[in-house]
Image 1 (tube, rainbow, N blue to C red):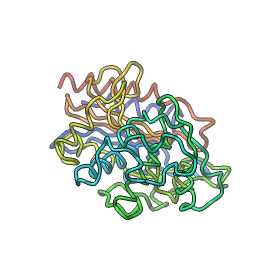
Image 2: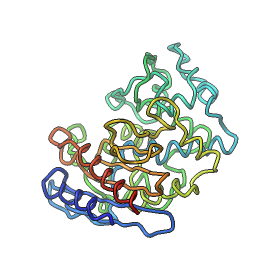
Image 3: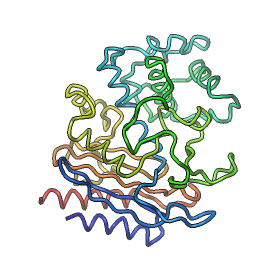
Image 4: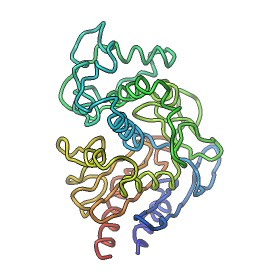
Length: 332
């Protein structure tokens, strides 16, 4: 039934749009349909992509790890989405002033806190503990709502503070990890700063500098692991019914809690159901969940390999695959 979508992914590899791709679809109560194509690495030597290889999920960390972890804090009575950041991290902005401490967990989750999109923490030249302290004390200038890695870094610190343990120590289901076996990992980019091709090490420079696991990046996953995480949300087993309803609810504009909802031109295509949630990662990853039609799909690629500066756009492929699946499953 999904042959057209699988063919689109395979053709993208054959045309050289991406070195490799792992693609799969899952429905409740059914075995996933999966396939992988192409290479896990081109340089310095060609390595075939295997079904159980780990991909650097990049910003899928936000929605597959950080958002559920924050909602579990709420479920456990340790936090509320509308409480200010200063309740959990009282030292935030203490030296530099500003309004960051008044921003709520909900605002951080929905990218509406007004934080900048990015800052090169990895160039600040300190160890993870000092970088985390400086992240809290930096006088961030708040402005208009903007998609922000910094907000999710702060959410990662909230999780660590309330759980009393590093993010990497949090339990994860099979197929998701912050410390993959490099020999079973897909390569991302040759990093001039680190002087090597990243394989089994987080691609995101700031997550690397923060110790490898952060609220915005650092999670690795196999195709099966990502599909299982998506299925748990689709079937309602990942969170309580109340938390899942809050996760799916429209929050602001095109956003749910962390996830994107369908909008004109978005990555999941134009034919999916209105309540579909999806998210992408900079390394070339993506996952989408169509709750109304009852299926989820993931397209994991290594499009930044060997360089982000030479890769081809992925959005046309993502939208084409999403539309092919929506057309097929709507007829099922």
